[in-house]
Length: 346
Ligand SMILES: C[S@@+](CC[C@H](N)C(=O)[O-])C[C@H]1O[C@@H](n2cnc3c(N)ncnc32)[C@H](O)[C@@H]1O
Image 1 (tube, helix red, strand yellow):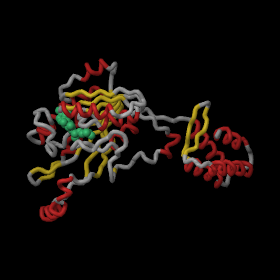
Image 2 (tube, protein in one colour):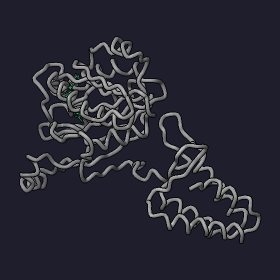
Image 3 (cartoon, rainbow, N blue to C red):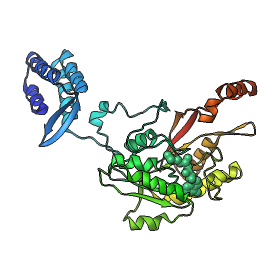
Image 4 (cartoon, rainbow, N blue to C red):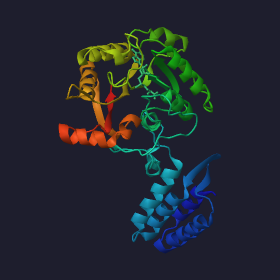
């Protein structure tokens, strides 16, 4: 369908009646199309738009009462179909913003299940759901840019990078975990021909600049950090593992060292996300998330958003749901059901 030239022709029409008559004709044609997506041609390139959205826009044109308003909506529709309006940090076309209904812009993220698309596995204890890197990568990176994850774990970020056409580097302290992340990520189809690099090592000391030189890379455009929530899950017995920190201060000191190492590698004006939760210790709520947020601000980052994300209880807690509810009622505390995603700009 050559919608743009049809719309252009309608646009030439001068009186409201003839414009509305032609608009009604296209609406009929769109309605008769059995597909949910309408393909159209733009300067020899194939483009598409959701049928539902095109229909809505056309009906809005039909509903107007003045020629000025009608032409305004027509012009807006032609522009959204033919002109790409992109920001500096992602590939979203702002002229088609209404189509991104799966991109979250609210600060409360409620997911009822993890995305199991592609090669993602839920097996690694302490991993995050793929929707987290998926949402962030689409908002804060463009295709072909470079992403760093200094707490790689099972490789969720790098799998999403591959799916979305972003190059990714991940660092993981535990060698066995790094190896299985590599195996896992290599199973994801590399349809955008991106580079995926997994480095076993300690993120506070690893020489990333040398690794970047080998990749002919000057800087990253996005960093995503998902550190251990101190000792909630013990990831290894290694002393450099943040989950083996001896105290809150020790944990923050270790986090700061990782930050010192990766901060200079991010392009100015670009974003860094930290995914973290709080914890209880000796009957006291430790606001780890807020402490880590303060470390980021002290380093020079500007806080752009605080997102609250729900999580389900661990299997162990779920099995003892009643007991935990009783303990919460008796002990005057609340059971953790949320974690934070902090967004910072350099
Ligand atoms: C919360 S998990 C990350 C999970 C990951 N987002 C995923 O989806 O699988 C934190 C990871 O950081 C690793 N880690 C801890 N201290 C580290 C350090 N100093 N350098 C690199 N990795 C470290 C742990 O081994 C663990 O796999």
